[in-house]
Length: 292
Image (cartoon, rainbow, N blue to C red; front, side, top):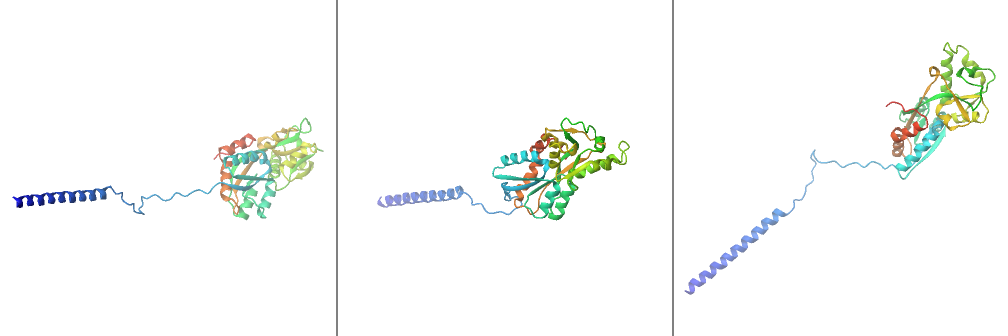
């Protein structure tokens, strides 16, 4: 009887021990299953490459631009500074020829906006900059003092004893004016000698289109050939049309400059000028937008 009791006790102990060991084994297996796998590095073709962060648009840029762009670019620069907080656009206006010389002689500038291809090409060659993109178009007209009857038509520029003002040789608006006069001289309507007669009336050749306009505003000229966009800036002056057959379309070019101190912001400004917002400021000031 005692032996049977002893055997029963041993059996119970064995069963309890077996159950305990089974429970421990189950917990161990469950722990392995629940533990998160440690991710391993992969270089497979399907893995995502790090996304490059674009350089910030910030800091100051200097924009050298043709004087006929004064109002349009002043508006544009203000809007650009609002859109890109932390930027500052310093504007430098003069004739495209003068600006090209400044830039090529090392004057600081990040963007160049020229009123013709020739000055942009000069900068491209010297500075190894981009060729530039056409971003605006302009046309010529005659400006005369308001109420003056001295000049009523393009042909009147050849009348004797007039005081006519043009921009200097090499200044885009001066070059465009000479092209227009040369085209008229070749026509039957104006004939040989027209250009020479007009040039005989020219009393001065000014450094830029705004200097030409000022002469008319001050009553120091009977007429001048300027851009159509400039007439809106001078209430003392009124326009006389140049016939389409002898008019010239001025193309405006813009490019960021190689060697500028703030290339990323310069590129952003050029893109802004060529985008919808910049183009709206140009059309507001009378420029035409070229097809793209």
